[in-house]
Image (cartoon, rainbow, N blue to C red; front, side):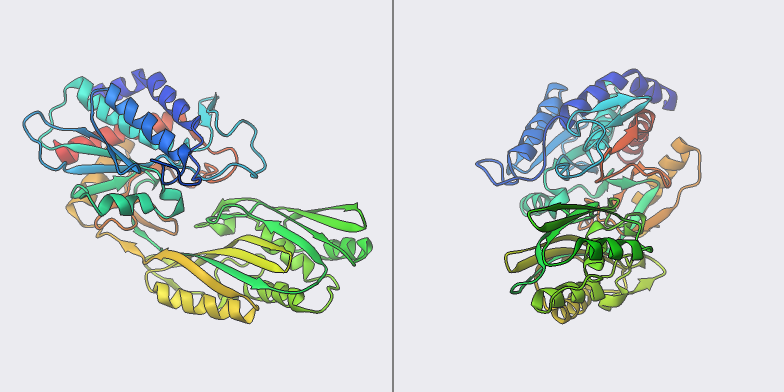
Length: 466
């Protein structure tokens, strides 16, 4: 049966790619609420498109509360709750303001066996692989004893309010996995806290500072405009800042100096792989002869609490680690300063030995010392699913059989769509240490990997529901 499944999936490669192409073309970044579109017209358009695709293939579809869609494959004489839920999302992080794209991010590009575009791996490609798995079982007439439900939402990238709305009215199947992370199986996810802070000041050399636009990613660009400081002072500070891997560029106009900083983006769960353009530029500014006052105090306070190159929260009093889930990570991801006001966003991924309350207390103290205040946050405690559960063991056996290698359960700092789903795990689709540029410019995945994913998901459905 495995060879029949594989043959079917690979023979339908173009069908899968066509689906992905259609979905990538939808600009499903969260936007302003509209009638029938709580998270914006883009996510709703992607939702309608996916429901239409599933309906056209004969699946039993539902639009749930304008935020989630479902497609069921049920045995003819068994209409009970499906035994398996495959949870995916159609919303994506922004590409606007993100430099380095070689192609239009909202037009899928295929080249040399790979596809590129916003969402091809997070999470539009995987949802299409899951769809193909269900279509394979349906078209090949593979018998199931229990049903499977494909669930696709529209707000995973911004807190999963869509899932909260859905779960307030509906139940999930007993077993749920999401192809929203990596293989083999992710059963532990660190806790998460994404906070916003603000401050105020009068005067100062910094006319404006703007950096970062994605709360859960290392910012790859920032800039500031300064006055009252000689250009030679700026050049000297850059030359002496030899330990910084970011690049700085200076332009002069109207008696002011603009400094652009270029870094490298990375997911907030692995900030050590990026170069933070916000903290790098703040550190540079603190090397200049800034005038006294609250603006200077804020910059130096933020530099002390969240210094460039530090990703473990040590100077903010947040460094922690444990054997199960690893070490805490911190990203100062967004910062704006202009017209006497500043604001920013900080993303913390904390180990299972910590609580949200502990993170909040430490971060609040660090910001207060920097002359700012914590305005609020969204967050979740750590998520843990028993690696010895029957569900996890069945998925593991499928992975090992299909991939021909020993599987293992792993812990991550990223939050997946099952973070608040008891017993849920992430199952796919990243492999090894490959950099798929998730949340960055030129997001990509190989076509063969997605086809293999579809085969694995087909086998998993049969294992759980057959």
